[in-house]
Amino acid sequence: MTELTDVKCLVSHKKNRRLTAEKQQLVYRDWLMQGYPGLFNEQILPMALGVFDQLSTQLPAHISKTDLRITLGWYASRLKYLQNIGNLDYRSNLDGTVASMITEEEKAAAFKKIQAVLQAKKALAVKNQVKR
Image (cartoon, rainbow, N blue to C red; front, side, top):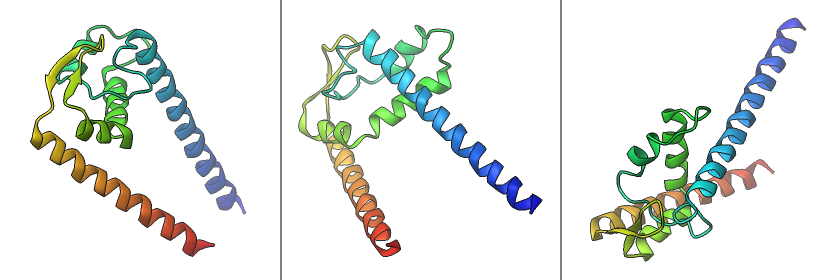
């Protein structure tokens, strides 16, 4: 009986830690959207290369470089972001101005990632249907 209780507590702790991490991601995302609305907005524009280096020198005390890297990785792995890499011709600076052109190689890589994301979502949907 004690082992079962310990396992439940451990699972609950991990779930709470994950929820806390998700809340932190929202805080970091909000900081980016408020501080740099030209780039971080509903349009989910492709970031200029080197944005991490620019932002890492301007971080508030409560955001580490690791947190920033994770948040930018989350942002750049979103389906809408990948679609915009394929559909737009340019990357944006922090102020929203054009930074550089997106190459055909970058567009092709984004297309491959999109296909992988869609396949993963489809597999997850099938798996969830089987469980029912």
